[in-house]
Length: 409
Image (cartoon, rainbow, N blue to C red; front, side, top):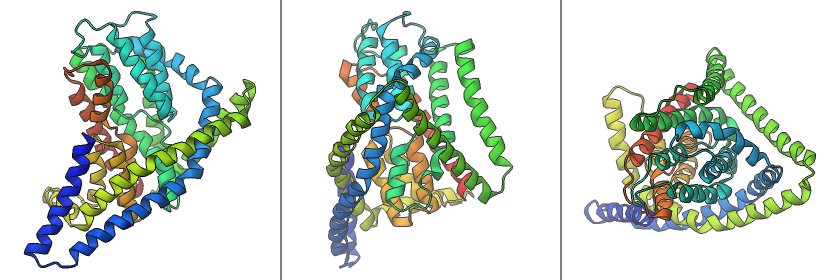
């Protein structure tokens, strides 16, 4: 799937550039395309170098949290919720523990730990599946929640914003938290509706009540503040939460007698490896997007969407951030490259960059997740998985745009 997306972006850019060269007499377009390719390659290397230090820092801290048992603790807290959302799973089945660990790792931003545990959870759920090629209700609910962006610490977005020169890289933290809450609740509720699951029980109501209470209280508090002060206060809250989280990781590790320094170093080594690993993928996507923009194809697409939005009487300042939303269901690396390209083109402190960052943090690579997880167990009939997953993504995009106007416009 990603091969087709990457090739399509490249070819549309080349075809648009060729049209301008042949039929419009735009002789400079060829040099613009070539220069865009070389600039993209250079930019990819610079971004990766800028990420090295921040990646090593955060993955070192997360490794301490993992060794201190914080992921396991969070997994145990989530188990009652799974029993509500997936009632057909027998009590004590291994799938519950695997799913809990997967979600706990996702919430803490431990992507490398989340994917293996997610694949294990899918295999455990497949043992309960009477029709091995047709997704069960439990498998669908598990995937939709996975595809609704449940990461509450979007550190990678902070890192890219910092690398691109944002004056306050974590200013998107509270907006992302609000938008991703909308996407996750939409995914759960739509799937429960399709499966006719009753959510009126203690575990789910406690979960939703706590979540809505926290988010609602935050909204009420921020709503009465002037615009500039609201942004400043949300930034302070975001910084405070991150400081508390980091302190909790360190103190818990020390209390559990984890060798915090050595554990940090081991995690930091992984950060270095990840930064090097993403370099070719980042350059590939940045190159395709650079050609797409330099040829004028991206501007043509966005102008068409802007025309329709303005025709409806709506503000169109968010339009430059839409490429991130359009590519995210298909490719995480593609959406990340679009977010970075938006920051580079409009500035890391611009409104489009802010919206793009919030959308990136509140949506997920739904089609990729479905292909990966279902493909690992040979499921071909996905039923309502994609519909509910894409609905959750749409909720994240719309909430992200609305929250961005509230905080930043």
